Figure 1 (tube, one colour):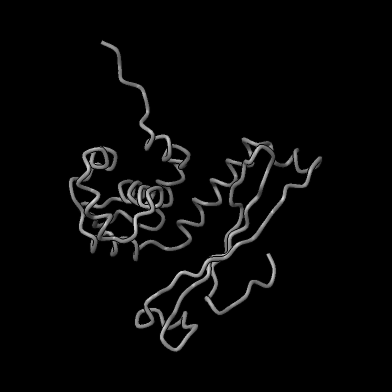
Figure 2: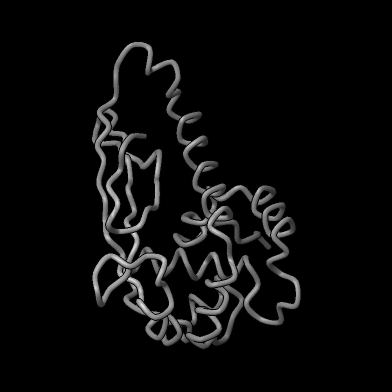
Length: 181
């Protein structure tokens, strides 16, 4: 009998994540200690799913877990939005930053970025988006009398043939302006 070796689309989206780096970061930050259900591997798959489908809220994500395909991909049969929220709150930003920088390094390696940079200068643009936060819980990020928030500054590199990717990100208080990269 032949083995089933075809990857699902979802598995292909997850495959660029470096598994050894991921395990090392989970161990370093002790992110799976005392975890009974929502382990980091399942959590990252849910987070990726949320991003790919543009899921609007944690409650919508909780409802989506009832999909048979998503249950198979994540190894979860259900998850409450409060569990997802608590998990999201526990993870330090350095965890995501390290994963992001590793993905950028992979792109640079696959596109031979360093050698190409010597012959052409890729177009780089910067964009920022304000992410609103609850003022009660995030007073450190106040930017209006009734609102708080952070600003995600993202630099995108555009290569030939429409190929683009983010290569740098910085998070600031929403009221602050980026001074330099």
